[in-house]
Length: 136
Image 1: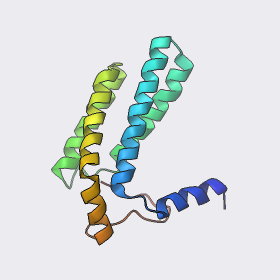
Image 2: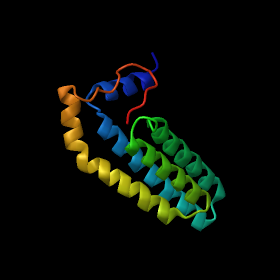
Image 3: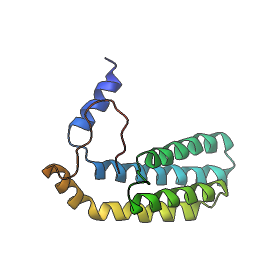
Image 4: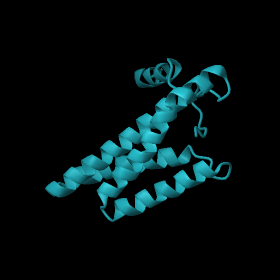
């Protein structure tokens, strides 16, 4: 088995929760947008495009984990993520960071409660195998 795969499996099995994963993904998206902003201001287009790809992949990863047909919250977050992508295309990085930070902060505020619900079994734990599954 590839060492990276072994590490990835170990990190998920060793206590990652859905809330932890969501907060980490939002942090990654915000950091990628900040990197895009810096590269764009510096005129470093090669770096910009690398960070742009990371931004889009991360936001789409968050979006892929939503079930907008099942809950109003997921539907509204999906709409906000779509709006963020529109603003990102317009290079309105401040708006993107502000919206993602607000969503991230909301998840962070309920993380302890969500983690307790996950530990008690009321919320299913993250899968420990390599499957694709919605997480929010």
